[in-house]
Amino acid sequence: MIIGIDDTDSNEGMCTTYLGALLLDELQAYGTVETLPLLIRLNPTIPYKTRGNAAVALKLNTDCPEKVIAHVVSRIEELARMECEKTNPGTVFVLEKDYDRLKPILRRFLEKAVRDVIEIEEAKSLVSESGIPSKGFKNGRGLIGALAACGAMLNLEEWDHTFEYLAYRQNEKWGTPREIEKESFFEADRKTYPETWDTVDLKNRLVVCVPHSGDPVLFGIRGENPAIVTEAASLIRAEPVERFAVYRTNQGTDMHLLSVEKLTEIQDMHSYRLKGTVSSVPKTIHGGHVIFTIRDEKENEIDCAAFEPTKNFRLLIRKLRPGDRVAMSGSVSSGTLNIEKIEIKNLASLYREENPICLTCGKHMKSSGQSQGFRCKKCGTQATSKIMCEVKRDLTAGLYEVPPCARRHLAKPLVREHRSDIDINPAR
Ligand code: ATP
Image 1: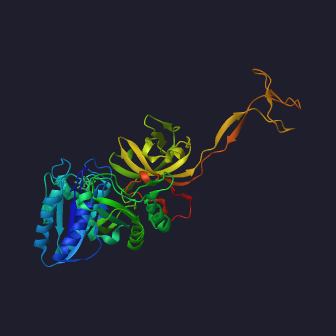
Image 2: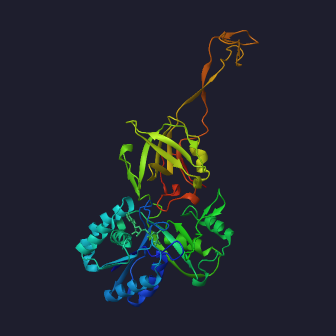
Image 3: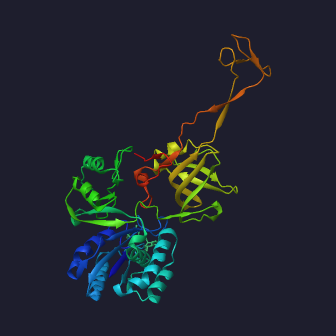
């Protein structure tokens, strides 16, 4: 059977992946775990999310599904942060006899949950019409993520994936500062990058795989396969770990992105791949955010932003000029694209007026006075007007990304791009 769970945590504590890791151990009493658990990231713009909009799925071979259901429901009742208004847990159970029937239905649901917005009623109708055993707590919004995670487990071969090794803290340490040896994370990165990524942010000298909130996660190592994330984790020196789990995940895959031809198709709370021509000089606004506009062939425009947390990425964005052709990916909120990656396809030629050059000595002429043209002091040559000179751009065409400290979970890091047609510039 497949078990989907979502929405058990609050900002103060817990984490649905921790509950997943706990259940992986506990459910051994009822059967055998068949494959790696799934950590599925859903639409990153959903306002109800606590942190990264994650849901979890486990697959178990068992001949007592009722006992499994009772156990999972009771553990959610015990551990979920029900007191938090935003915590609305949901769990669903897909029985083996229903795998084939539910596979396409839940695949569509997964895609919608990652790229679009779903009403709770839609999840509740699906559960009742398809006869899926389930339990929603409070308003039951977690049913959305739980169904989507089951859809991912039923359709494993259909989506690109990466892995994350999640280490969890001992219970008594929850809520206290994490004791870690920072240098060991840099060492793990040196030994396993580029097969692992987002362990540290080299340019900003930050360890980025250790959260700061009250949840049970000590660190999470992301990478291309289970062996490499396990190797990297073995190099970490930190406080003792209560347990760990290696999850298969859609993190780092760009699964959230929709393609659009016209900028008018763009809606808030969705994420896109889009292209256009820069149509305003980037400006830095209050808070250090850098904003500019792009235009499509039909003259429609959209605001694009490199927000303050994207740090040094803003230096690159500030160098864009009207006429540059770009393709970008990111999420749209309040009508503004929050840039995750940018491909600078073509740089506009920029010109600056300069005094004319003397054809005899090659030096710039001097003005002879207002409306009197220009004259070379040395050779006496003359010219009537200024000339236009091309300005050398301090920017190169290529593919760029925000630094690891600002990366969205679903955004595919450039180390995973295997393109030979363009310069790839990972933010390292
Ligand atoms: P947790 O560790 O508890 O999973 P989180 O940061 O992942 O924390 P949730 O607490 O799960 O966030 O909150 C997200 C809520 O939004 C869940 O109830 C989930 O079912 C719901 N949700 C996820 N994707 C969508 C979507 N596309 N449309 C509407 N609701 C969604």
